[in-house]
Length: 471
Image (cartoon, rainbow, N blue to C red):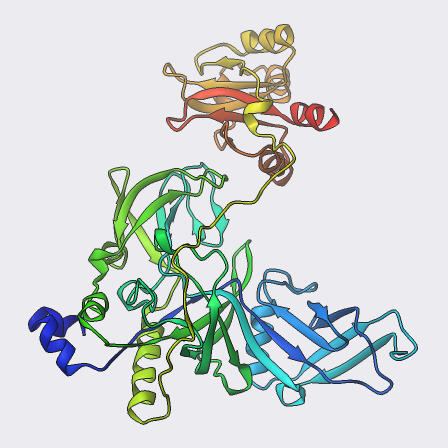
């Protein structure tokens, strides 16, 4: 369609094309499956349940269960979770169900253990609350340490960038005003036919972050288009293949479906700032994102996709084939997706503390100072950490009272021989909880506080954190 409009015209495309098919295949964390396991004999009113050691949500009634894609296994966390479980069931694998209950007169059983497959389930529906994001931000990391996020592994100091989404092939991007998409729209979902059942959670159409809520019968789906996945040190998810046919009803839809990657821009966002309002350090289009490298702060870095363009293309081609073979019929939406929805942050009634609330001025030194002078400074200032800086007050390392004591016992004179170069740091805007977790993870008791130019602003210690929490 895009090539046709470029080589001919909108008028020609309107005359020749009836339907444009779209596709996407990416991690959809807000996904899950609703199952009904049937009644046992004697019956049980399930209170808690596990399938393959993944705890399953019990939303109501006696034997209705919801498998959340991001819920992780209690025995293999970060390796197996709800997404993998859904895939296993779709594949026809046998899984182990365990459940407990408190027991009632009509549901006397208090525990059960059995093995089941999808054929044993009365219902097995994919029920995804938020899928098919129109676009995603491009994630980078300004910190000194690697971050493991839902946008993948982000290397320190802007050394890589990650993005997601199918760009010009994305369903919602090809009908940005939702003329043909809404409640009741029949779609390709996981290798079978499904439906849009409304706007997705966090639907934000004005900023082109629209989402949809979808439903489909897992028993008819294919594991080729539904895959469980693990993001290193972050958690589990579910990759979902989704496609929507766009009927070409007018010239506007011709123009919309002719959209190209170079017209779709998104923000480059620093995930090194763990706040809702992360800083945006630039813009980039999907053509550049798909090229393999982009410029961040003037430097060219490698960029990787968390989505599969090959699978997205396959979704759109398979959907086209279904329509041509009359195996798939288009539907009019009963109600179009809303365009006036605003995505609001959580209302918070308790104060959140940040590093800036507790940090103190850092006691510093330079590398050319004698160890005896540093020892005197530790005693007179009553500190355990001295931050090593250069002439511009930029971080060069850190030494502790233990480092200095050991150096003096070994009669060392050069500070450079005891400086720790790999320094875990923080920023003023970082939540105190995050800074505290860093200290626990790395078994350290202080973090230098830096600005974006890596200049030392202060220091936060375990004692500072304990003092505030004590209050």
